[in-house]
Length: 363
Image (tube, rainbow, N blue to C red; front, side, top):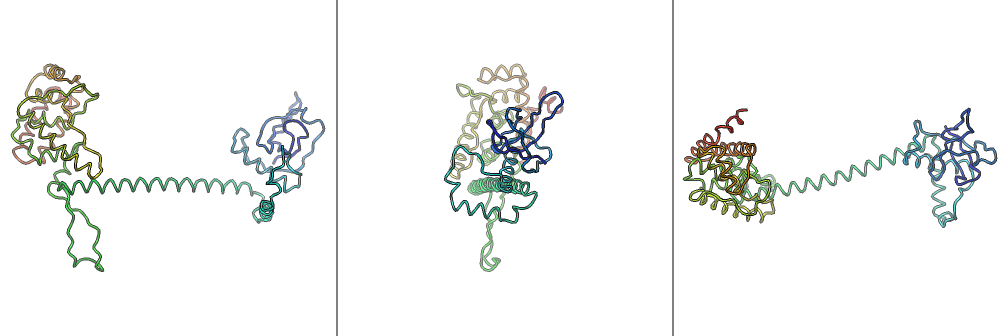
């Protein structure tokens, strides 16, 4: 509990609650007080030209921290309420506002004082708890709205992705006979995964849909293991920085297959854009020569030098990292593709998994 006193003069004139008497043996008392204006600090003897007495007693929360703006605001509100309850006079103000004489506000103040909760000894604590509860409710409602918006966005994105897969033939709507409808109301459509969809589900890659479309289009047919490794590298490699021009690629079947892959990607992008889903990234040619030469049995030094001549600078560590990802996608193709592409993919895996790459993979 703290004594309510009246500071008779000075800048802090008015009611205040004493938080700490500030009495010591060596110096004059310097009480720590909180005023109705939410100011907290120590007063000196000059602020008390005449003795003061306690006008009332006020409950001060345990472990009250006068440096906390929130704590000062709550206790100042309690002090202002104590003024009215103990009839300690009007609060000193710089000027009387129109609200002081407003009859509606007067009725509300009277109703507030007449409310049963007003006489509770721990009223202010309950009010503060109610304020915190209302604030938490508002924050929870705001979070709920944001979650609903995000959930709705994910649902729309999922539906659009399903539309893309249906258009490309990876999903088909399930046809339910009318005889099984309940009350004549057809159930919601549940898409069925096709054979192509099951193949797609076994490809794990950022470019999985493009990879599946390239398989379906037949652009990988007729390639040697080194040529297939070169083409598949465009689906896994991503350059760290853009080069001023397009890296060169081996002429012949590799160049023709990559041109076919670009046509497949263009058709896929049209479908994705129509259904407003993120576009599959473009092919990256930066690892084509490195993959081709390595799968062709050349040494690492020649592979790295050739990649630099083709427009891509690779360190030994970068080469091994991308080769491991290339092996992973080639291995997936070996499991989902039809013959003879599956056999060529298996051979390409063996061609790439050698030397330092084999050591890194086994390690």
